Image (cartoon, rainbow over all chains, first blue to last red; front, side, top):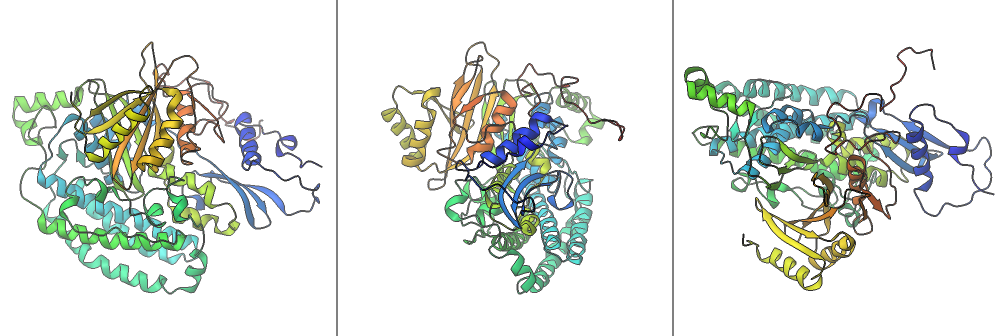
Length: 430
Length: 170
């Protein structure tokens, strides 16, 4: 006797075709569907819909899970609830105008996204960036990495059952917001990088705050290690959960800490160093286990490495301009704009037309964002607007592997696994 | 313009032009990135060759572009990385405006699954032999392909049904 199909029993009312296709995909997931006995009406099998509005899915992620008791037999992920079409918007904006949209992609680490866009545009349009700007960008990127990992840590531990921990990581995040406020003028969506440099130099106050943070934060991290590294509950919830095997990690296209937790030291900062990452010393932490605990260790060690990079940057920070002094490539400084006619004209031209890469040029540049390789592919038609701008979002790649690693897990571990993979829907859905 | 390839990429290009003389159309560089354009029918074969012979084991991305030309309007680009040689290579395929269709590379790299769905969703490029071929961002009920150049920036009014704003009406 054939199994009853979900599609025969239900008729969705809203987005009819979409829902039906999703049910169909659940049934199609494995090519060999066993013919089961007609089920007892009180059987334990059910299909559970999680999200899109679910507090533990970190945004508007929707999962359709086919359960057998507490086990997930098959999982399907439905994304797109935050799709805003930023790639389409990019084609209708100048490169600089598009920058605030990148803040809202991976909204947990806006600084890295700004830098990713800028480095790609600088590559395609051949813009030189002053030494000091490179170091300021590195400091900003590493602070953003810590900020993003702090949110991941707080929510992961909260998903595993300890609520107060969330408050402690957010206390540290608050300090980072204050630093960004001083450094860039905004707490959250910073838009600090500019094509050809950064918007403004680091003030002395911001400098002192970064130094304080770099000195005090390692102690906090050590305390957290002390709390979690030998914690039986935390271990039981994370060890051997959501395993992505080493041989599968590349095949399935994992990115960032998820890939490194499965044993590949793939880090754009080492493979194709941008900014001045080749001049600072740091390690790329990796683990072989590929489970949630491995991802925990990788990210914790990354925070240590970030502090190490920030300290080296503060020592090495050279003096000099923070933006290239070429009016055809970058905005002039505000001093020039307010007090000279040429500066005013150049400012207007940059806003109106913007930087124009050569016609027919194509370039791809990727940075190591907290979530993984974040790349921008740009095709130019010689105007100030990109002909095509493609964003390679690490969260998109990581959510894809959820379909794979959720199969065979317990329903209670779903939120922990999502927390461990650490996706951001703003970036995944674009 | 003469190509400036490093040793490992030179190997790849030499290997490709030897084994796939007829399928290889163009090799060029732009802003330091290397692009290889091949004919559409050979995409799976060449991708498998690159993966097995030249260690391009990591598929970073698959995406489309709309060239908006009368011939060969659509372009599909594969972004490949070799971890052993730490090299990046872009493989390009051009497809016609009418019924753009290409074979899926999910058999070569499983990660192509979602990337190809995304390309279909945005440009309407059909991938054959794909294990789970659906739209990904837009709902199935949506009839348009939003990243095509003729799709208006403001969207098409009425193309997506919105839920009723009063709760008790159906």
